[in-house]
Length: 462
Image (cartoon, rainbow, N blue to C red; front, side):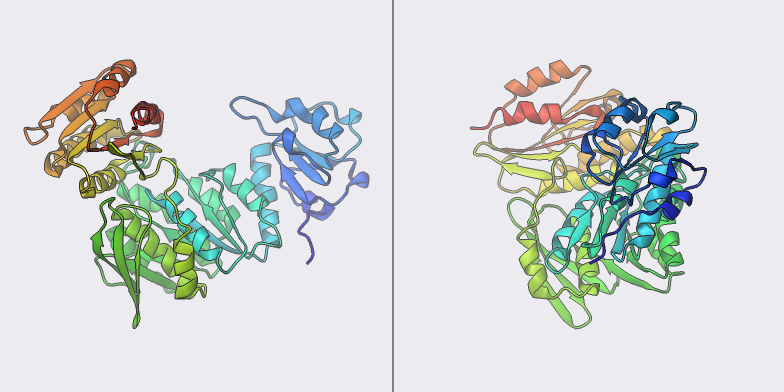
């Protein structure tokens, strides 16, 4: 099997590139932006990050045997001192994307792109587990889904991989268009359209416009689109798409799932109907939202040729993912760690899971602000208060400027609630709170660092 590599013609095709020492060029088999990960035949791209500037490590990577370096034309002046090829460009971050696009053009791998307002990382992980029963799979590591993470994911894919499952993230217009144009997917999935990043994307129509760039790039390639028919905006968008597969929990669809019940830890028993076939299973992850996440992954895996036996075998390997509806059961309480991030839709899903845990007498929520909601922030936090009022949660403890507003919106149904203005006070309170025989949810946006409160609670296990 011929190894994927970059040749000198590929380097010449990088926009704005000027190549010095091209006569000593050797084929490139690896690309890195981390000076610690340099090995033979590696191209190093010097990128300026928040903490480090790759240009400061050029001497190091040359000593380690880098095959070539890409540098900013305005930042690097020691061209005469280096005896390997030096490629200067106007923007090294853009060059990373350009190199990844060239690498992508050489891949015979089937590429799957996943985005959405919620559930994209979980769906990506589920799908990768399913497909690994039949294929050699590469995937986005963690949630490295931005203008740097996406190119690096592509560059980590090689000739041995049959499938790449890639996650695309955004919070500004144009970001999905950029990363999707590099990814050039054969299959695309948008999990849902929700109230995420409204500070920049304005409203759900703005979210749809931004996320739909993934569909546009896939359609250009003649690829297949997977549509969530339970999402009104996506269902409407899907009507114009010919090469598509639909899935749903409530609406009609090619793959139609149904919840048959839940176990004591909110793990759903489901069935999925496709044509005349029915597939039954109990999911190892909790909550209604994960039914749709699994259904979409099931649909893609089935369309790629996995049979029921392979999927059943893979389901046993699916696990809860760190800080994403991660349910931990101890003797005296059950903890739902959903601290990775928060928006109104994921808050709703988290409270759904909390309310479905029947093995505990008391329900407690510890919640922090939802960020990036822009002008909708006040409304969405008040709507959360309405949701909690209807949920039957016994106790709510909150932190953050907007959660103070939410706390004022709680009525008599939530008998005990308190807002905290500083983190240490809440931590001290949680150390003494009666949590015996309780189910506890901890959730908030990434910037709220709610995992610190999880640590306080976990220290009380017995």
